[in-house]
Image: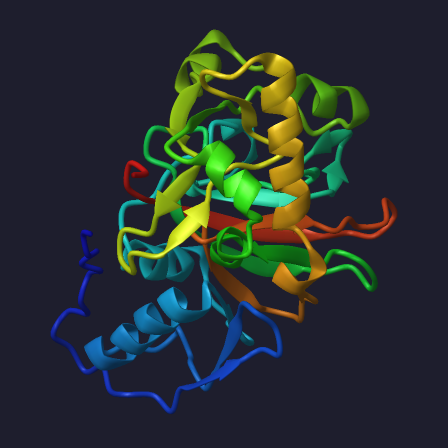
Amino acid sequence: MTTATPTQAPASAAVSQRIEIRPFNARVGAEVLGLDLNQPLCADDFARIHRAHLDHHVLVFRDQRITPDQHIAFSRRFGPLQIHVLHQFQLPGYPEVLIVSNIVEDGKPIGLGDAGHFWHSDLSYKEKPSLGSLLHAQELPAEGGDTLFANMHLAWDTLPAHLRSAVAGRTAEHTYLARYAELQKRSPWRPDLSAGQIAQVKPVVHPIVRMHPETGRKALFVSEHFTTRIIGLPEDESRHLLEEIFAHSVRPEHLYRHVWSEHDLVFWDNRSLMHLAAGTPDHLRRKLYRTTIEGDVPF
């Protein structure tokens, strides 16, 4: 088991803040109160946040009135950032920030409006999938727009014996293009991909059960969005097995539903969770900024 070495705060006037970490009444998640990311974050406070992220898998930082520069700087404390293949929806001047939004201006979408339509772990289709993602609320609808998270450690822990046996030692293929055409038909937010973009998202193969590189806990690592097949199985058997795993993974007792508040910054662990966008009414505006931290090759 390897251990990540998050970046420590530079020697400065950073002082400890009155941080409270309050777990949710769910099997995943906690909110972080009393933290102001406008202020320098001392090494001890950062260590508490890092530990809480490993323990709870998703952290909600309340009322963070931060700039994109501050969002990026905090994200980089955990590792290098990944650039999303849909460069069309980068925040101007900030390629590290993906705009997640259903807003259309001058006839063109300003962001990825159907992000999270299917359960997934961010960038599982990359050789080095994401460690975690940080999503910062900019404009929220009066209703809808919730985000659901599924605890994939718990999904593994409770997986029936026949499914455990079936996936033992097996790998599965992940590809960004798995459901791209399907999404493209139903919304204006999926542009045609260039040859260069397609080259960035070639299919990859990962273990179905991965070990968290920092905690050593096992988690299921397949999703209905990006996982296409189990290597070495006939297509019908692979499809049936994946459907059983997907259904088990998102049982209600494995979930936390996040109802967004103004200026929430939500940081989740893609090695431990899947997530899903619950949907926003078409006539209501929603806009968030997302950074994504590079992780390790799954093992």
